[in-house]
Length: 160
Image (cartoon, rainbow, N blue to C red; front, side, top):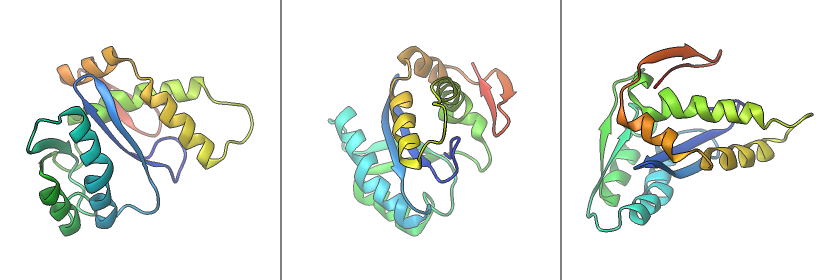
């Protein structure tokens, strides 16, 4: 997800009622980047939060340049990850998209500093804000389907 500042891309994941993965994707998104995410941060988060599993199931968008690429598919297979994919352009089915990003964006605006902020400082603040997301907010996002749609200007969200 691109949030707020152009050039900052995030790979995020939730497990239960907590954000357990928040990794900045440096450089352009590609099959190689997806493979690196699966073999690195995604695998580490899954092993840490669900250590007794031999395989893991994750929900991902239907991104043909990354997750669906041959490198992405191979990395998932090597890492014991099975993916459930959302249909293309279906952000309303992903709790990160329809509720959590809106909450994070609201809190980012509330903590915005005066003056220019470097990309590195923005990414660091974004991580800090996201990881402080209330567990109740995450729980509500994953327990029920979206019921209300609204727009923040850059994205449309449906939130609980």
